[in-house]
Length: 302
Image (cartoon, rainbow, N blue to C red; front, side, top):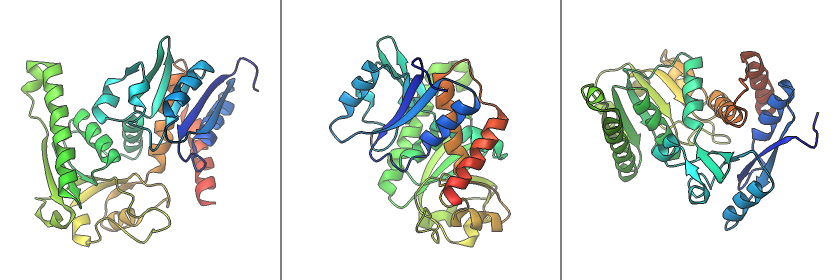
């Protein structure tokens, strides 16, 4: 039940009408019996700074940030968390005395979702399909969790090379921050291939994370790589797409005997991570997460 003391959070982006975040956050608040409301706020291009300042003046505890503002919002923040700096994007703002602090919960959402489905990064040879913003999130997580190697496959080699260079910068920063003991550990190797060069991948048993929009509704018949031989090189596969629930990429991977994961759990867990940042004393239970998943699946797929 809402009162005049309700905590207010929201979402800024353009557009926001399609977002499932209001449903998810308000569902959590209801399940946890919290005095809390989450509202979507469409922000026009050019109004971002005013929107952040206005939310702060109105007392918003926090905001989620979606496209196209995940990196554009950074100059208007009082502080940015280290992981958000490494990823180069912010999706969650948390109120402080002098403004908002920016975080990125996408990496944590992907990590928790992969753990849920038994997909492991540590010590693994990893593939990233795509070189956009979500690829950067996946690469950050793979470095953080000590992958053995990261191969970025993308249509544009220039974009893949730029993403690989960012990974190398993160590795260099990690070595500097952790000292000589960390430097003695073998660091992850990074390389790039075009999508057509997948046959050059040595061996098998890769973990693959599909970060492009290929296969998203309504073009559900497509996969970023169609060749069956590619899927015989991988044993675990994650797709960040959640519409449809099972993408063509996942179908091909499953057919080859891979353990697979869709994007819905990543969406859920990044939202939960934001909710828990705004409510530090709250831990969303497994039962509530299960009920959120059921509700979101029903809204997405009927």
